[in-house]
Length: 246
Image 1: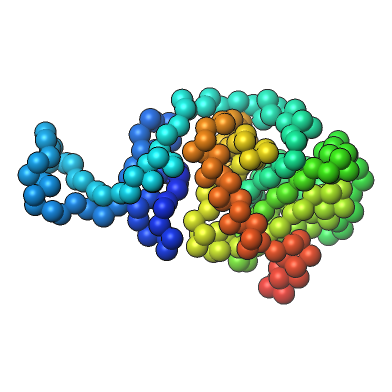
Image 2 (image 1 turned 90 degrees about the vertical axis):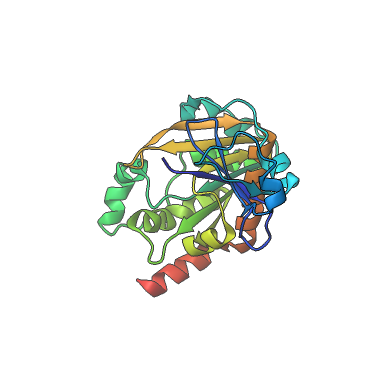
């Protein structure tokens, strides 16, 4: 079972850190091991399998509190948020490819060498245009490997249509994302208030989303957004970088 990174109060990326163990109500704590003999002798009911670590109180108060674990919902349950959000809809895309892309007719055309940069309006882009005309922002950061996968190259090739509609799509290398300790899951963040975290199967098919307004989860997503946005580059620059490596 893969751990889910929650957050750290360390500036240099070392411990202390909190992780969530998905599908349980348990938190994994990383910190410096307690070695003070005067403290150790005061600990009660210690099992041979147990150890003890020190972490700052701020780590727990910032990241550990949370509401009950949200239930998996179909993606359609958040469709209304893309029209009703008030100022910003922000997306982090972390995967190396998406099943919905590979099943689309546009994927087939792209593999055949067709230019898919300028696509006609569809319901998604029409809504983006309407919302951005009202002063709202649609923003994404997409992780890209070095070299880029087919799935990432496909999204890069099709991005201009979304950008023309009003989305600001930027790119960040996976190595940079790991250095920044960004989450390893996809999510939408609406108005810095509502978080919709994606669930995928091993074939990159979307299973649904976990929707929460838990302050700790939303704060962690906001921090990830700010770090990613600061370092990410616009679509045109990403296109040039990928082209130079192909």
